[in-house]
Image 1 (cartoon, one colour):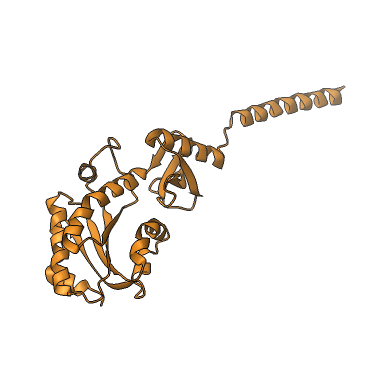
Image 2: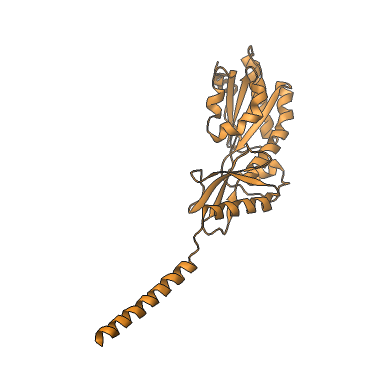
Length: 255
């Protein structure tokens, strides 16, 4: 009699335990990689009005803690990668695609200035740092965007077709004038400007290679190859002024 009561009690306890565990699993929302991908892509499309895809999931740059990190790209320009972080509970999506948009605006703004100084065969490419910059709208002026994000830094590359027998003193004057033009146009953010004098058909490949090289961290290494360039020089803007003198710039030439 006692054994049967004990057995019945164990059965009741077992049933209750199974019910508790079952309800726990039902209430537990396990977020999958597909959930993060879906949240990222849907938010990006709503935010920017275009279609995006995933380049990489995980193992990337992250500015935030406890987020799922992705690399995405617009379907219209697969090379223009950018970083996305999705909160673990899917409550918010952070991205820096606005940087790619503003880079294009900056390139368009600076190209005429560069052509006035270096000639028609010149291309401008830029890359803002990886932080999540603030913005009001996609129509925002690039200078206003940079001033709004005054801690935002960027790299600017000036690609010139040719330059086998350049006069370094004359080129230095042009480079210094370009730096002054940046300041005159209120582009006061910390930046590094590289000037590349390209060999062969490298000039025609600039746009196709730029973001892929940057994503893989191979851009500087690639263009420092003497098979790719005749020469290169550089300067920086720091604390809203040129940090390089004329002498510094002329000494920065590699060859």
